[in-house]
Image (cartoon, rainbow, N blue to C red; front, side, top):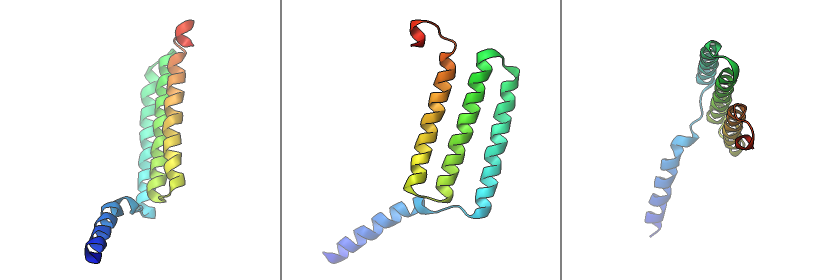
Length: 111
């Protein structure tokens, strides 16, 4: 009985071990540079747009950058507080984009 319990515990531990693997400092720097490059590329795509469409595009680009940086930080230093920051970044990004999309509306639909 104790052997089965020990094997079950080991199996469950191994199943979750992959999530605990943190990034090395070099991997973190490379990924951070990639996130910043992606943000610049997404921001440049917004240059051809105008009015509120440009604002929406920029909010989406900034939101994607914030989420990517929060996820990267959570991978680099795994912790419950970093997981919360990822959830907060996703919520903030969605809110900012929705707020910009709302600028096109008027009257009751805006409310």
